[in-house]
Amino acid sequence: MINNKDKNYNKDKDYFVHDTALIDEGVSIGEGTKIWHFSHILGKCIIGKNVVIAQNVMIGPEVTIGDGCKVQNNVSLYKGVMLEEGVFCGPSCVFTNVKTPRAMVERKDKFLETPVGRWATIGANSTIICGNKIGAYSMIGAGAVITKNVPDHAVMVGNPAKQIGWCSHSGEILDETLTCPRENRKYKIVSNQLQEIK
Image 1: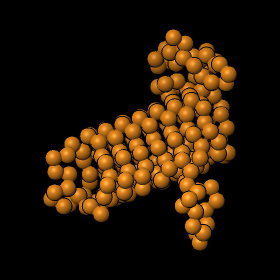
Image 2 (image 1 turned 90 degrees about the horizontal axis):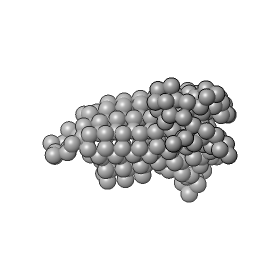
Image 3 (image 1 turned 30 degrees about the horizontal axis):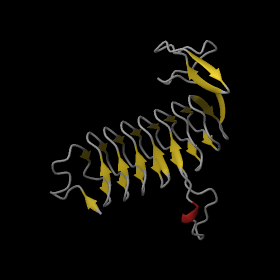
């Protein structure tokens, strides 16, 4: 394990790791990334450029985080989680990696992958059950429990989470006009999928 108080650690690197954070061997960290107080990055994780990892975050092992992601306080990202670029993980959200865990039964061979599409938002205190795909630009509401695949641009709330609408690329909730009030992008629904009209 590497502690960044070691005078050779972080030398000539273009990223920041707080003194209290722990980074295991074999971790790749991109330029401009910031890792804050009491966070622990386990071995073989790949963290992209300009990522913000807030306080008391646990990541890994073998987790991939794309460029520009923000992982807020008290988040756990376990093996099998893959965040594409620009994903926002709200405070205290959790990703599982086994569907039927037992303390006394080894199930590492049962870990399931959970891919999260670009620019998705995972709300505070939400739980993502492993093996489900979170669509690009989707919005997972605070406290939601995701038990199935989430379409691109879907807005999901509740336990178990249900889709209540659609959101734009910039995260604005769309009304019946399907027009983004921030960017004025227009959308249509085709085969229960949101598509931008170009």
